[in-house]
Image (tube, rainbow, N blue to C red; front, side):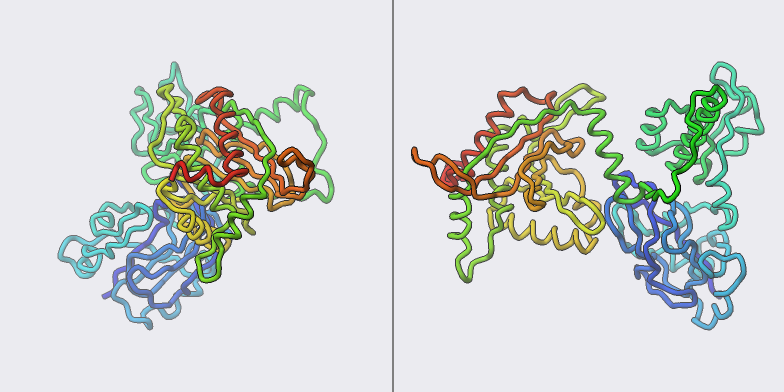
Length: 480
């Protein structure tokens, strides 16, 4: 006897609350093994193949390619213990998502019941903090059906009537678990700091938002819907007062959704500009000797050393001299937090947009090791295979915008980091060298820093040391 199991989108870590389906890796009626990837999704961090903790026959898929799925929403149902022929005829049921049948998942069997042994063992696989153990399955609650879920997510939040912050409408608040009685304050079901921050930034009272997650949990989509509804009400009021622009959309205009990687980058850039009082200084440097040093290192038969790896090694040496810049600011505690390890991020342009892979513990790596790790991360970034862990928790960023053929830039800091070194193109220019005018390979270096963590003296000292190492690479020997 087969037992139907429902597999939901797991917590992908790093505060991610939703993902977009890129492609399905299995079909309805196909037999899958435990921990076999069933779908590829795109998060705000990277593309991830999601493994299913159940083995059996796929009986339903939920969502077509391009559909945004919140964490906890169903992905597939699997008939555990079923033969392939058991699922015949299930793939064309009307009303199913993506042309597949919607099979309701029964309640978990009691210990010892048929099929319980399969889930009790679990796959043991972990996907960025998501465990597939039997205990997690026993805690699973039944979600709304596939037909009900979109309606709940798209519903406009209905604020309950309140008096001094106390709910008075039992009908509006009594349906969701975790809410108080009609004469008591409502408990807000929120576990995501991102949800609270979005609500705070838009002056949104979370007590007025009805969650579509399990047990009334308020998800990011709920808050964003409430913010949109609030904006629409404000716009309507402004139009009524004659202060809004009544012009409609411009014919032929193109609208690009700020979702996935693009949306995450936009949110991070905006937050950096709002929170960090940054400043930028720059200097021109003669990189002729640095290029000669690289050519000398790249002898036949030796591992290749990239120019970016040399600049990365210069950065780690400079941060050892100026540790104040390998830091972040804890705005809650009003403290500057200096970090012990240098996790060096570097900007990489890909077909999916700008990403910043992170080289862990860069301060302990040689130039050859830095070059190999940068090459590995760059290849993974262009293939869209970087994990969320490889794209987060950097402490300093190296931005080589010279590859675009530009000399200078004033970049936005990669929040919550406190500093970023920018490198322009290296071009032949007239330069005074040893008291004579000569043609040299010149590069412009820019340094953007959080003015809360240091003043101009430290920032200028850091940049000058970097420029000196570019002009005289032998200075690096002092820090080796």
